[in-house]
Image (cartoon, rainbow, N blue to C red; front, side, top):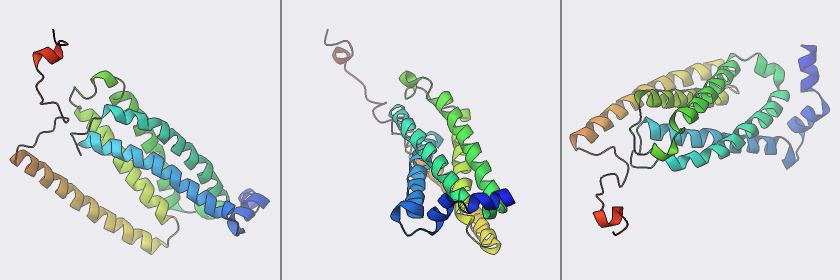
Length: 212
């Protein structure tokens, strides 16, 4: 505990926590938010696309988003370490913090697996159907990020607020699942296609063979 208190009260930690400078806590929190936007935002877009949302959008070009997610990851790591330093005793005594940390690790593992499993062959990515395994990984990724984001926000609140929020999240998940099932039923009822845009376009033979 003395070591944790020393970390929390170092000159740097104290300056970040108590300084009125925009380059202290404000900048660290801003950069942490930017990192989350890059990492969680882009990986959520990819996960939703693989999971079945917006099926007409081509998936292969989304591989270009991974370098931005790497930048976001390291921004979160560096700024997250600083945010941990300024209140390390409180965080390490908070069960919700460990839930967040575990969810982040799980999400990172599934994101890495998603990249190798789905984006391993970009040339044929949009011409082959996505497997149930691909969608399962995407679903697990989305669930892990959801837990991580909610738990991260709840680390600052009273346990009663945490329990109330968890109950609200569970209700929201059930409602979302019902909405997805209804959307899929309506899509099948009206015969809406899951193929990427342009997949049903028939090309003239002269175009396919270069006009010869």
